[in-house]
Image (cartoon, rainbow over all chains, first blue to last red; front, top):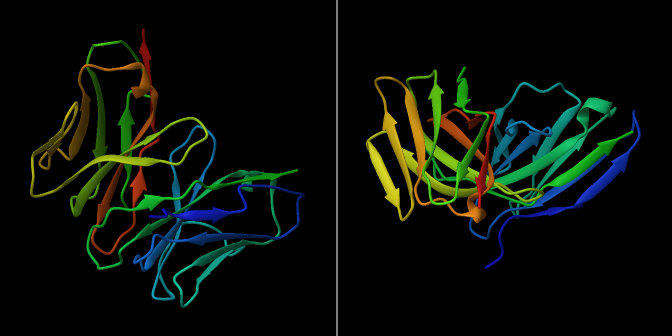
Length: 114
Length: 111
């Protein structure tokens, strides 16, 4: 029974570049959320998607965007990378039935911006 | 919006002792409170959760208590073991909103 998967595991980029991170939710889960975790801090909410629709957006600039595909997988895109974007990017999936639900995290993508 | 505070930021206990981590939240509409354990270099793992219609929940050595009036909830770990050493995060969620995490508590269980 596969859990949430993310790719790539690690990524090194330079300032100004663009990055795409990918996530596949647990089978049967229809909702995907993205979080940014800076070293030493708790995860910060970026986006939530359900049935390909954006359900929520955190306090992040427009350089951050995401989408969800018909198979419920998701991509997070970050444009014009800044040094401060260096972080662990976590994807979490949940059933998407509505109401408070447990979210299960993937292993994350560690992004380093030089 | 919701704000979650967590204390202490670091906690060291002797093996076999108990550990308590406390979180407070600001949005009285929050009704789901999970706790996650994150070991170094690994993903956050759900260890226990509680909903607002319950005051306490236990799972073996782990328990969570919720005081809705005071808007705080706590994680209790009894008979701590070295493998309990990790960073623990609390979170709060209200319907129609999104998870807000606390800043984390680094627990060290000393042999």
